[in-house]
Each structure stands twice: as structure tokens, then as C-alpha cells.
Image 1: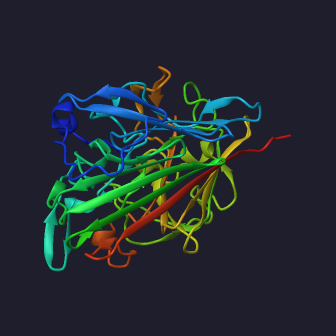
Image 2: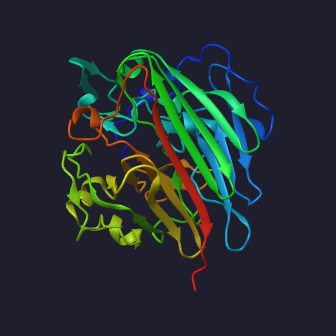
Image 3: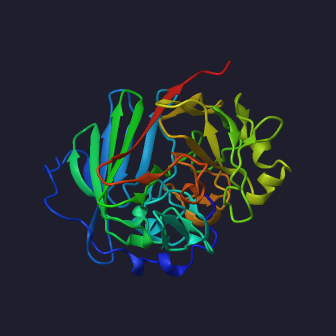
Length: 378
């Protein structure tokens, strides 16, 4: 996503108060658990590490339910980092943090003009990208401490209470996320319930780099997306409301294509966002393969499965070298790619898009699975 215009409202001083309620559920086990840092108000941030016998290792923070580190084995049998992250908490607190690894909400992606109308009532939202509400506003879910419900060696479940009126959204919402590592996969289960009608769109904003997140770009990565159409956008990166065929364009990833020439193409939509930052309309329904990202030099790949209607492909266009990654290297344009399975952006203002409305008595659900593997290139 494009983060220009986030403003100074996202500084450390604006961190949300603790919105946790009630008993925290079953006491978490101290397996793979360590202190990661401390918020300005004194609350501790904890890192939880999950792993498998196959060598997949995932570290998640309770701050933002953030994927802080993800490692997998390559063809050489050695563990390697395959996702971007920060080494210290201050970078996650920074207003320049490009949502690195966090769970974004209450509404992932953009809502035009920072408002929408539901059941005849217009709701005005926090506008943190010019006049746009991006990823739920300045104080989105990626900037909250989530309550840990369960934790063992292979899974972690957390919840977050979002009060009625939070960032302008109606309804008291209880969101949950469950991370589970099994064999060579990470399963992410997102859910939410609300006491009144609202809109919900949650996703993980993890950036992959299957090569070397410390020194290499994603230029040599090969991407395939199971979509025949994408959503073109205006100058504010808001979908125009129509679906454009990917054929004969740099957006055609129906067959795996190297990223470098696509993100530098002279297509007006690529030029408009300095790369790719577009939602793809996925084929089919239910849990199915949405995209596959491969790195031929190392043989590593990840397949993204989801039950969501779209996947936002974002090629790290706004990275400007102001923040350092986990290994000390500056994050530059194209150092990672986010593949965000979700509902359509600006859906609350587009009646023709799949609905993102959640009503009392119903449960919002989103399932995302990352399947990792290696394939030797001869």
C-alpha cells in the first residue's frame, strides 16, 4: 500500500490506551516467549515463537499481532529469513512504519473520502492518507496490544476489542487471530463479531522477500496470481469501480512472471503508483490458491491460499530508506512484496463490490494459508 500522507498523528505519543476487557482466557504457556520491548506507557511487548520439525519458524508480537520474523529452510537445508521485520520496537511505533507484518483493520486497504454510509447513517472515519482512511486509520489494529488467549509450540491465538466509534467505525467489535504452523505452512484464521452493524476487512500485511531481505530486492522473484481481472485506481489509489482484464498488460500474472519488468512498465496504472498496488479479483470461491511467489536463485517459494475475493499485490513502492530492517539494512523501494488476501478496497462505497458488512449475530471470517517449499532450478 502507499503510505504517503500518514502524518504525525501516528507518533509514539498517540498509542492507544489498553482496550482489553474481561478475563484473558486460558493462561498462555511460556513456550518460545520473550520480552521484545516496552511501550511508552510501560506495557511490555512480548514475542512468541512457533516452529515445526520441518524447520519453519514464525515469531509474532502481541503488538499489532505482528509477524516479526519468518524463517524457512532452503535447498541447502539452512534456515533463512523470508519476511521483512524490525529488530526493535521503536521502528514498529514509528509513524513511518509501512504496516510491516501487522494485522491491519478495522478495514484493510482504503475507504474513499474517509466515510461510508450504512443503513442510512453516514460514518466519518479517521483520514490518515490525505482524505482517505487507510488500514483502519492512524490508530489501527496494527498499533494495539492484542490479548493472548492461547499459546503453545505450534499455535498462538489473540483477540482485540475495538470500541464503538473507534476511528469512526460503528459497533463494538471483538476481533481474533490465530496463527498455526503445521509442517511447512502457516495458517492464519481471522474472525470478528460486532454488537451492531459495521464493516470489517482484516488481513496480514506481511512483506515477503524469499532471497535476502537484508541486501536484495524482489526484482528476481517470479509471481503468479490466479486472477483474470484487477481493479484500476485513481490518483488517490481508490478503485475506479470497474474490473479491468489483465490481458496484454503488466498486470497479467496468470502465468508466472518476473517482477522487475512489470513494476517498471510504462503502463499508466503502474506509473500512477510507482509499481503495483492493486487488488486482483480472484477466480473461484472458498479456500483456493490465490498466488504463488518464487525465488529461482534459492528455489524457495510460497503459495498463498485464501477464501477471500481478492488479493492486494503491493511491491513496496513507498520504501524510502528511512527505516532499517531486522538485519540493519535500509528498507528501499522494492525490498519486499505484500500479498494481502482481503475484501475489495473501498467496498463500503461500492454497491457492486462483494459486501464487507458485518451484522450482529454473524461472524466475520477470513482464512489465509502460506505454504512454503523449495524447488531446485536446473
